Image (cartoon, rainbow, N blue to C red):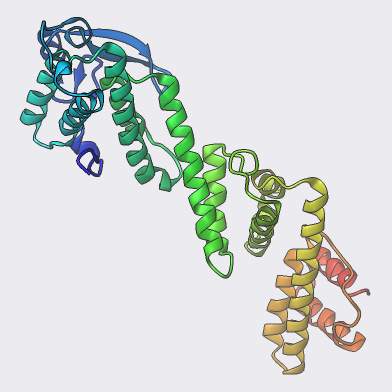
Length: 342
């Protein structure tokens, strides 16, 4: 449409320079020469930032303006489209020229201070949302991202509370999109769940209260995350991972224990079946690999496996095989014996 904003990249937008008295290629002298005043306020990063406001746009007026010839919607769209064009151009000289004339446009159109503020907020929101949708996928906002967003906030004199809310909502949307993507596949991907966990932790999103994700989906995510953490022995080096995953997916203690027990039982029995199959085929190295995989789960919580999985003699042979190859690992031998009811 005529008011759509182009793809936002930092190079094509007015960016505040590292100095508090410069806006990219716009010096403070140029702003003051163009009847702009400077004001200090708290920015997105919590530090003082400079906001520049045009004294002309809110105080200057003409005896006759275009308000008498066009309806309100048309007048506002004229200003909005011009403002978008200011940000859209890449050539700095053209950008400077457009911004230099911006403060003259509002009184010609007959816009008041509140109307200008509303349009600035609307355009600023478009830029924020487009930019955030591109950069939040990496899981965080770095200093350059915060600097860029701060430049848009100060250039358009956007309310800090509104900017914080825009960022918060974009983070929620990013988490929500990742959850939708995960459940679009027939099988929940461990890699997708890992990325989701990173986003939830970094963005501080509660997927139950903020996004209304169902308990059934939260349980599925928790199960995949726990199983992946055990398989990769992440819990072995960090005992807090279980509670961290539990809190991230908002699972209560009772359900956590139930799922954890179910995962340990099913995976342990599966690996035991594989070990017995390898033993019967004489593939002793493969049988050892399966026993070591089974122990990953037994170390989290030692359970007695169903006696129907393999014969007593086969279980005993597996234990002897493990002892012969791990004679000094007394803890693992004891866990293995307990799991096989010896």
